[in-house]
Length: 381
Image 1 (cartoon, rainbow, N blue to C red):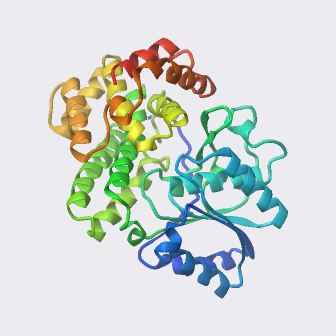
Image 2 (image 1 turned 90 degrees about the vertical axis):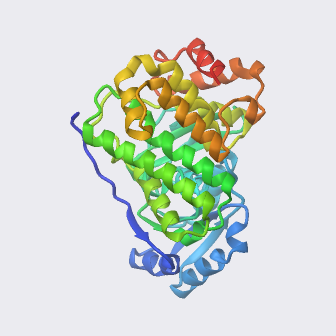
């Protein structure tokens, strides 16, 4: 195993009704004034907003609100939130929603205390040295944002979708109530499944050092996602399947699966960020397009582990059979596996590749993935 440090400071409160205690837990942490961040209104329709506000009021927690966070969250909304947080002098950020809401809240938490333009950190020009405490109530299991310090934001002006990562952005407390996810559509369930699988697969297939235990963790996560997604498509009301899906999602990107691994990188996310930056498709849908195409392009560079994936996850022998089975499963659940299925014209591949390569440079992968390499991968899609 490669030497590593593992520290996940996030406290998880898991189970029905836990969101009703958010005011009490904020008060216990000495928080008196927060910025409440949420999406486009679903939490008001299902009663979650009212329960959260009641809990805040019961504990005398003052709050300002930033709403209308969209899927593939944007930098202009981050700037709006930073201005609100600074003006109101809030002590913490509370995000109620899925990965997009939480990613926005993390950017605000960092940007409020940053002396400059927070986008500089996303460009890799500066590091995060401080952030407001972050609390989350999760309504969609996919990104594991509730248990990591990552944030992905799209700069609308430049059409760049970049990320930051810092333990300072790990939520202090995250509430995971699977009942809040019961209303997630089939469409977003399958996109979430694709996202979780990609989180598990990236370093599993690219790391030069991947211990057997870590490999077994990844394989278990992928097999569980496949089984649970199939079950939830058939029985969306199944609380226990929903609960396991939520917990598996958190484990896929909370630092556990990559501990002790070495030499891995994130090419699929790098390419997908360009897809969703340019075409605003759901992140998971973009990943189900990119991942099989990248796997076919890359498989000979780590043949043994690709064959292991095929055998352990799908009971097949060859790398190509494993890729075929994954594509077949993606198709069976209804998430796209080609650019054309997402209405992305082949003529735009060069634009996507150039956009992706700019991110590859920021991530230190520019020499590993040239524009020509990325074009070749996308042509396979």
